[in-house]
Amino acid sequence: MFLEEVPGIKKEIRNYLEGVVLRGKNSGVIDAARYVVLNENAQFSRPLLTVAAARDYGVSDLDRVMFVASAVELVHAASLISDDVADTANKRRGKDSCHIAFKPEIADLAKLYLINRAYGLIGDRKLSSMLTDKQRVDIIRIASESGDAMVRGQFKDITQKMIDDVSGIKRMYEQKSGALFALALACGGIVGNANPDDVTKLRQIGLAIGVCYQIADDVLDLSPQFSSGKPTGQDVKKKTLSHLLGKESAKQVKIFEELEVHKALPKLNVHPTCMGEFISFLMGEMDSKFTTNP
Image (cartoon, rainbow, N blue to C red; front, side):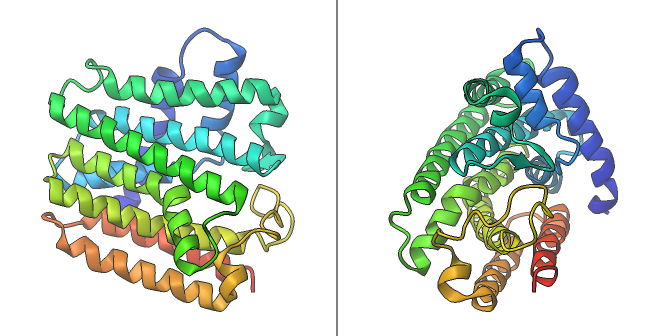
């Protein structure tokens, strides 16, 4: 079962990030990047989704997908730096946020470094020698589209514009969080030669996962201070589904999106064993936030 392999795969991802991706001269910028990426509480959920998708599409060799799974995690780490600065959050995963530990100027450079390093990984022909030029271009294109969506979602979150109703907030969730889940799944599919229709479906599944994740994160914001490893109460003045609908109704939206995910998975042209197993695990983790924050 895929879940039984997850601890070992996480260790491999961490070792690859530490020993290959973020290896180099010991500069303040790389130190800051390593500080965020290699946090001991990092769960690596997004690169694990990439591995799960690749596995379902027939890529059993972890080395064949490690470079792109790592690129996804670098983009995620960069987004955490940006999110903490925007929210003036001083804690992340139980430690000082990057801009607190290394100063905002260094954190900003670390964010840029992580994004550039991610594209460097994807474009490195030595690391991605098993890919065709089309596969490589497809991954870069989707990465660019996902990055653009994340910027748009973060802008809406910061300015609180274009999110006045349920559909507007859901769209912001898809952009802010879903785009990266979509990238993770699509990259795994592309490495495994998924057809274009499947890649589109994988991205749609990722968007729905992002909505679920963000709803759960809203609930987490209501929890006791620092119980989640980061400050809470940051969304008090923000428009969220929990604030607009109430916690129970927001949970119903999450349940609906989760059902859409599980209805979409069997429509892929592969048996989504690993993806289904790991996505169900992620959804369970999200559900626990509702039970621990009544």
